[in-house]
Image (cartoon, rainbow, N blue to C red; front, top):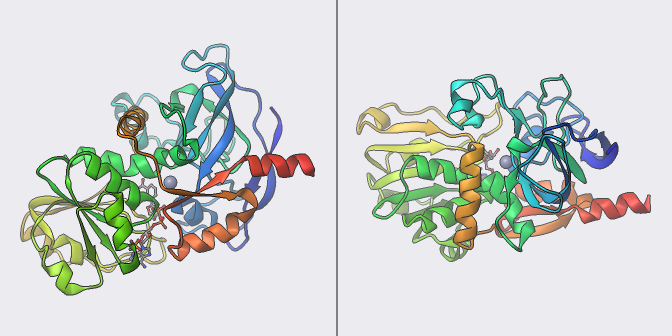
Length: 356
Ligand code: NAP
Ligand code: ZN
C-alpha cells in the first residue's frame, strides 16, 4: 500500500476535502483492511473543527470502520484475508499499564492511540477511516459477526460500545429504570441496547418530533426534556441515567431524577469553550448520588458488544452518504437532521479516485 485516497481538513474553519495518506505495508502484527463503510460520529466534527482544542492538522477523521482484510503481517494470526472486520476509536495502547492489563485499553495510563489525531510509538500521526484503506495492529481489530447490513454495523464500534460499556458497568437490566438523554447516534444505540438488556428504558429528548422514533427504537417512555411538568413526574425514580448530548445543558435537571445512591454518567463531550452550567452540589449529596463519565470501551468489551448485537439482531439506523457529501452531512448532524447515523459508503471515494 502507499498513497491512498482520503478526506481531510486542514484547519478548524476549513471544510473536508480530498487528500491522500501514506499507509505503508502491514508490519508483522498488522492487518491491512479495505474500508467498505465508515460511520460519522459527532466526535469527528468536534475534532475536525478543533472544538476540544487538541487537533493536529491535516486531520482525517473516522473511527467507525468496517471492511475486509486484504493482507496480514507475518506474525499476525487472528485474521485471514477476506475476513469482515471493524476498527473503532483506538489503534494502539501501551499494553503494560494496569488498565491495559485489565483489558481496558481505553483507559490506558499512557494514553491510547486514537484511530485519528493520534501518535504512534514511531512518532507518526494516525489518519482515520475517511479513506479507502487502513493498516492496524491486529490486537485493535474486531471480528464482525453480522452477516449483512455491514454499513449499519459500522457505528457499533463507537456509538455502540460507548453506550454498551456504561450500561453494563452500572448494571442496566431487568428491574432497573434507565434514562438515555439525547436521541442522536449514541442515544439511539443506548435505547436499543438498554431495551435489549431488559431495562425499563426512558428517552429524554429536547426534540418532541423524535418521540415516536424513540418508542419504535425501544423506549418504554419518552420525556420531552424542555417540559418541566414531564420532568417532575420522574423525580427521584431512576437507577441510572446516560447522557449522550453533544452540547452544553443543565445537568441538575437530570440529577434530581436519580434515586438515592444512583449514578448519572456523561458520555457527551461538548466543546471546551462552552462547558455545562454549574452543578448544584446538594443535588448530589442530598441522596448520595454520583456523577460519572465513561470513555468508549476496551477491545474485549467491544467484541462482546458486537457479539451481543449480532445475537439480538441489533444494528444502527443509518443513512448512507457519498464521501463527497461529508460537509453537508456535518451541517445536518448539527441540526439533528439524521436518523440516526450517517455512514459513508467508501465505494464513492474509490470511484472518484478511479475517475480522477
Ligand atoms: P449526535 O448524533 O449529534 O447526537 C447528539 C444529540 O444530542 C442530538 O441528537 C440531540 O438529541 C442532543 N442535542 C444536541 N444539541 C442539543 C442541545 N443544544 N440541547 C439538548 N440536546 C441537544 O452526536 P453523537 O455522535 O451521538 O455524539 C454525542 C456526543 O458524544 C458528542 O459530544 C460526541 O463527541 C460524544 N462522544 C463521546 C464518546 C465517549 O467515549 N465518551 C464517544 C463518542 C462520542 P435530542 O434531539 O433527542 O435532544
Ligand atoms: Zn465516535
